[in-house]
Image (cartoon, rainbow, N blue to C red; front, side, top):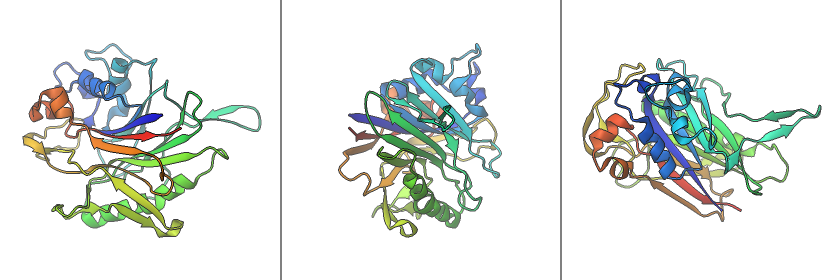
Amino acid sequence: MSYRIGSFNLKNLGQTAMGKEHPRDLSKIAEIIRKEDFDVVALQEVLSEGKALSLEQDMLKRSILYELGTKEWGFAWAHAESETDPRSEGYAFLWKKKRFRLPVAKLKDGTKRTFYPRICRLRRDLMTRKPYYARFVGRGGSYFEIRLLCVHTHFTDRDQRRQELDNLLKEVYPQVEDRIYYKGRPSYTIVLGDYNAELRRALNISGFYVADIETANRWGGKKIQTVQNEKTTLKRNFDNGGQDVDTSTCVGEGYANNYDHFSYDLERFSGIHIDVKRIDAVATYCGGDFETYFKTVSDHVPIIMTMSLK
């Protein structure tokens, strides 16, 4: 059975997007998520406690979750807990309830506890923005668990970004992957999101990259592969003041950087068919108009990983 896992940076999506005069098109974002048939999607740059995704009150615009359908989709949001980010940036997950559920553990006293998505508890020196960790169990008789680490690495000097990526792939990922919650249930751990780093290629001229394969030497030499080599960010001017607004502008057609990726353990995923691609959302949903997409949707297009599991 195939599962479609997505990642989508929503460019400072906050409560102001609910306003009538605000150009963000929440119904268009929901349309992309629905028509691309994501089973679960990790979202970055979600501000205002995720209200543009889940606010129940009557507003001039319906939130994304209500556009999708609250009976069909689950939702979770968390603050990224960055001490240097004035926007109070957060992450979110949306998932189809018919495909996935959150794990439930039965405790010794007979009570049950649901494992809700949560921010990873890390030392401050490991990552500026801590990953958002979720576990999903397949429905319909499937016996496996998917673990997702949603990330948005801090765009800072190259040395710090390099250290953060090393910590993410060589320290955080192996620890999450090796956790045992249920004996015998196979689990598959994936990092996904905005790495603010390009995948290393011969023609990569950005000067900052993440390698195709990183080795976690302290964790038995795990080989962590990073994939998705197409450009995903639109060309823009960086003049955002750091508030729940975005005054930056689109500066032309085409894409700028290859920043959005997936990473996984080569050995653990051996034998599993995986297909990864960029979704050409500008062409499909905005008729190829980059400026319209930039203003109404995001400065990123989503990416998707399709994986086949029993």
